[in-house]
Structures are given as structure tokens and as C-alpha cells.
Image 1: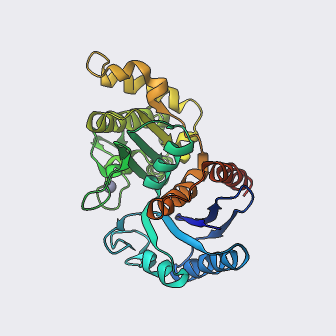
Image 2: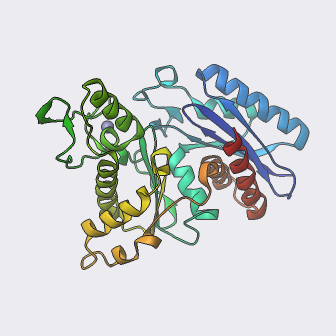
Length: 320
Ligand SMILES: [Zn+2]
């Protein structure tokens, strides 16, 4: 029986799954992400065990935290996770499991998954934006994931800073932001990390902080306006921990609509269709990894088992 392997390699956990052509033969597990040797070995052991029980994999996809060097199939040197710098993810799994492996970013994988079975079904132009500890964006244009020389890094674009986002105790100075490399880039202003750092700074100064909801709304809307101007997507899927804040999605839609101006961007009048919550939730990454595997060996993919796999993984992740 032909089976695809998928791994979502995240900063704290690594979700492994197998999807195949029969309704019942699938499996999934979650292992902690620690150092590259231990994490990779645990994943390989699990896949070997599945292969012994259920037959060989035909290919494997890895949807990983970035940045990646897609040419060599490795984690890029610029990753803040120092132990993972240059780790040859693709070669490690190819050598250990003897199958072709496609490595891509977690957000590109998630974009594929949301388009196949989630909130962007039937769309040929999709952006998947995750706003959590960092900000990542995956893009599908004309049905294909966007790659050039490398994957895009839209989380690090620049935005005008909000007038209330100042250095505590120095009102003439804008806050420097939290990105290690760029300070006040999009991720440095609007990620969960930025939000926590800003709150801690103001708490330490014993001062009333600027309204976090106002800042998140403004920064995420500004980012979306830039992305929508650049890509003109049919759908933008907004995910990640920051987006769990109640009421944030409606405020972002409202502000994005104002900034776009529907006289110029007609799609701004349909914000409920344009900017949406994810359909697959936390399962999108690993389901996307299976779709990356299926791109290497098309012809074995059956939508029903993997759709079912998505709900299974979603249930598992919400209970762990
Ligand atoms: Zn940055």
C-alpha cells in the first residue's frame, strides 16, 4: 500500500503523520523538538516502526520552521535556533528512510493544506499568514507555491509604526521592536513575542502600556494591505496564537477594508470572504507536509483519508 509520510517540524514540537490510500491505515504522533540529532532520531524511529507495520513510504514531506536553504534541503544559517543551523533535514530523512523528501516552510505546507481541505478550498491564489512567536507567510499563486531563489520572508517587511508605540519613559522615541535582526519589522512589532516584550517593558517601568488590541489591529491590517496589494489573493488565511484573541479578526477586517479602499480594491467589500480563520487549525502544518510528499509522487493521494487524518490530528493537538 502506497503511503506518504509528513512531518511538521516546529519550534517546540514535531508532528509526524502518515496518510495512505486506505480509510483506516494512517498514524500520527507528536514528539518534542529538542536538539536536531535527538529530534530527527525520534522521528526516524517512529517512521521506521510505521513502515515495519504498514509497509513502505513512497515519499515524505517536511514542513519546517524557517528560514530554510531549499537548494541544499537544510535549515538556514540565519535561524535563531543555533543548534539547528545548517542541519541537513532532507538528507537525514532521505538516507535513513530511503525515500525522496521535499522540504518546505511550515507556512507553505499549511497554505497547501488549507487550499486542499481547509478554508481556501477551490482558490488558486492564497496567502497563509501565521502570527505567533514569529510571523510567517506562505503564498500560492496560480495554484503553485511561490518559490524563486528562496522562499519569501514577508514577516520581516517594514510598516509605519503606530504613534502610541513608544519607548516607555521616553515619549519622543518610538519602541525599537523585538526582531533580533531588524528591530521594528512586522514580526518585531506584531508577533506574540513583540507583544510580550512590549508588555514586559511597560510593566517594568510601572506605566500604562499602549492598547495592545489597537496596536495588533493596526499592524496586522497594515501587513495585510501590503500583502493584498502585492498578491491580490482570493483568500488570506490568518492563523497563529495571536489570532486567538477574541474580537481581533473582526477589527482587522474592518481596518484592512478602510486602508485598502474598495473604490480601488473591489475585494475589500468582501472582507468576510477575503480574510478568514483557518479551517484545519493546528493540523494544517502536518497535513501540508503530506501534500508536499504527494507532490513528489503524485497519483497515490486520496482526499478522504487525509481529510480524516486532519480531524484526527486536530483532536490530538487540542488535547495535548
Ligand atoms: Zn525582522
